[in-house]
Amino acid sequence: MRVRLVKEYRFEAAHRLPHVPPGHKCQRLHGHSFKIELSVEGEADPGSGWFIDYAVLDDAWLPCFELLDHHYLNEVPGLENPTSEVLSHWLWSRLRPALPSLTRVTVFETCDARCEYEGG
Image (cartoon, rainbow, N blue to C red; front, top):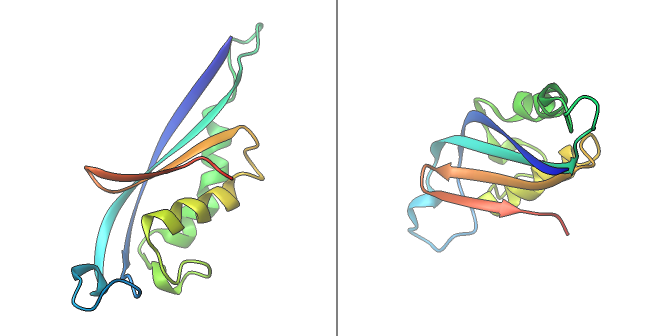
């Protein structure tokens, strides 16, 4: 049986977008309560009924969380222009080695705006 598991994580951070048009509100320093969804897909083991223990996702997420939570994203290497698009790719590149079954990283910048990245 093929399944997709999704685990949700949150962090708080400040950023500014240096490459938006002059006067754009996102050019100013501001913060977000980011929500991240990590999606993994694969075959559930017939014996255990599990595909993967959620703790594996937690372990992969922790180093990213420690770099991002309550930090100024523009100062994190690779996030000098921390758009949702850049952040989703940045997360993918760090998480995929530990989670080869990763199929999607979703970054919610607000409760109604998100970016979905599926590699490639």
